[in-house]
Image (cartoon, rainbow, N blue to C red):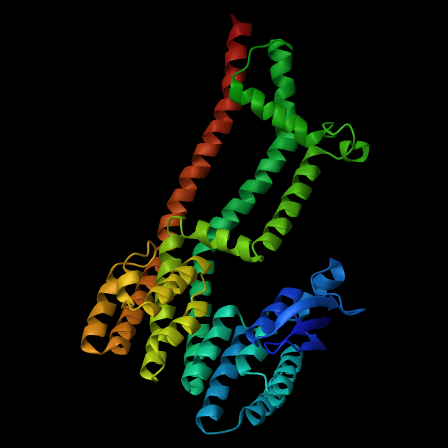
Length: 427
């Protein structure tokens, strides 16, 4: 975990300076803001490079992993100890000695140190986003706000298990398509580099250099030529011009992937990425239903604990897992503050299904909001399981159609001109 020094200003106007561990500058900035402190300067300490810089950082990030199984056990046992009245420092100390994951031991030790120093459990967890994601941290915050930390920890353990099961189902549904796609990509490079040049020679031998070929055949031949030979398109970069097109293409794709991953970790990039996911067929339904289920369960738990609607919304919006829906809940909270019932602004949301504000309105009228929202959460969790189970049956035939069309175009582009030129020669 890298070290950062910071200079900040408290609400009273006092200048604060310190050094602490954090996963990144952004993580430390968010933590200080949550503590009511305004950061002025955040600097990485000498030798405290963040994990993720270069090959060394890559291997370090790989070693800083906590298995879902360890996180589930941690959540369940913490829930048991907290409900039994064990103080948080003592509970964390016990968990530190019991876990077998060396990195998780250091994480729990750091959290325990922060808790003993007066930092809230949620803020201590927020220092380790690679272990406790944003949803987990905000759920803990909800538990601390509502005085039901043991219940929230128990629910988090179930949620982590459910998320793991969901990922396993999605992974299972995507395994076959990904294998086929990988084979297709390898076959594409193999055909383009080794087979198409020989076919191009056959076409040239049959029809001569001035032979008229279909447009798709010309495109495939030019693509093959690009893959094999040095690209020769960047005159001001002679070293790059010596790289074969295939290698250049791979390097560009890897660089684009790394850039994209970095971008979607920024606030604006994450928001735009989440907005795009909510416009993607199939995915938008799964993401929306998961978000609604999380909102309903967390909000219901806070309401049953006597937390006010505004406070419950403020805490719950961060546990959604999607920045677009989170913003809609934030906007709804502003309208609630102005005197409206929560069901009214939620009914205007483009991403929240109409059944949610309708059920919420019934709960508001009968005074059973928490009971109604629990039923909503149960309904959407079942819906998510149904959609995921049907993924494989949707993806496989679609993939077969796409691959069949690609093979058909390739065959027509290659065999058609050969047959046509052969006839011309025979005539």
